Length: 112
Image (cartoon, rainbow, N blue to C red):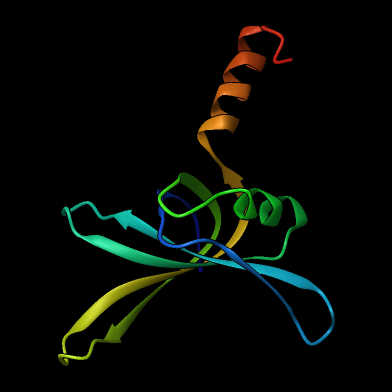
């Protein structure tokens, strides 16, 4: 696994589920722009309560940056072509709102 920071836009709304043990998790899909200009789809799962709350507050098309354990994979599409994809176990979520608050904290301005 790779410790990664990815940025992109949500593709669809995040969804919360409950595992067999009763613990909640949240899943999402994020469109990420690769270095060559291609778009990759990253499947995201979050177990951390704060990360889940941040994801669930967002909607389709929102910009987001995620930190976590990344696993690159390859899948075969309906046409038989092989395509790259990403899986991320999310540990932290950073949105434009968080960036503004962090900038204010660093500059010494009150956020409230």
